[in-house]
Picture 1: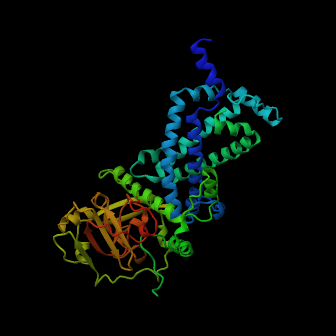
Picture 2: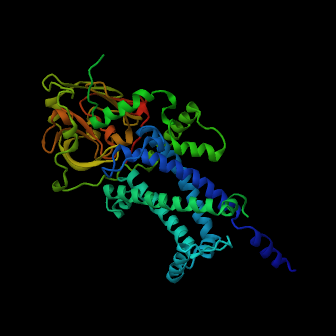
Picture 3: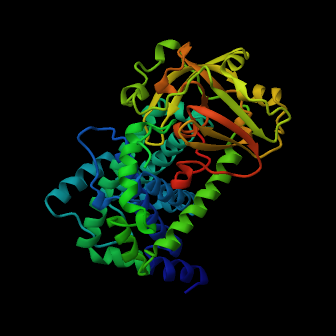
Length: 207
Length: 257
């Protein structure tokens, strides 16, 4: 066996998620929980929808000032970790390898398979079309939530960015719907990780 | 016991709501209690970080770091977006929430603005003298810490011109404001010198009504609403951060936009 073959077969065949993916994943998980919990409390101070308020039981910070302290602390963790993750994902080629291409035909076929409980998860190292779509989608939602968040936080200093979202008030809605998309993703993501426990193990041990 | 009063620069509805929230939770664990997501956090890290004192002091320290970050982002020349008259929010929301009876009532005839600290001329200013200062106007967006916003029209004189006029030491770090009912605010000098930071005497070209801060409001379109004090009776140029009403209760000090 040549040296090159060893390098490609030994780690690649056994490691599903390299260490940097796992570290970024769990840091992100913590940061996003804090951002969502505190974000809901901030939302409650001036709800966008009259009928929607988040129960105190599921918010973080206890009142507006406390929630803002949490939100603007966790944002650094979220952004620094997120930038590292996306940078690594692009330069290592992992995003391209794992998430692309996404073909419409594959998505339809996989949705049909999923609905009839025939969607296989045998090979954790290879994502099906639905996974690709969701993972790429949540990365994009992450980019949107950060940019819309910056435009709400600094609508004077970064007013060009705020204008891109249609102004301050519109940016609040964009921020909200990006949150809703991420929460929607999380529900599916966590449910599936629990249904297929080896996928959870892979994100912890790498294998 | 003092009577319930309206805090200027803050939506009174918010004040009452937050006061209600603040009161039972004045203990140090106030920021941390009753949070399912924090429970998950504790579960995931496997360590109990719900030590109220530690967590709160860490959060406050990060908030101070954020003051520095915002000061670094702040541009002395970048102007807040301005709007046409047609964009003015009518009625301007403060109006609707105000109980006129609770707002401080300042007598314009006897009013004097105290100017103290690192200034050459500490002469108090009558309202007549203040009204005679060169007038500038702005139609800008007021953004509340709660998240809502409204566009208003404010007229007055540039704070930077006034500071120059009274011979203020603009190398000082802060300008502190005190209001008729005891509300206070400290702002950084770069913001005080920003061209849109205004000593405001009029709303929509009419003398400020009592509910909007008569006789003087400090309009700062580069800061959140609660950093725009109303009913201002004194200002001090200083190198000491004397804090402010809401800042001392946990809101971020810089609160820039």
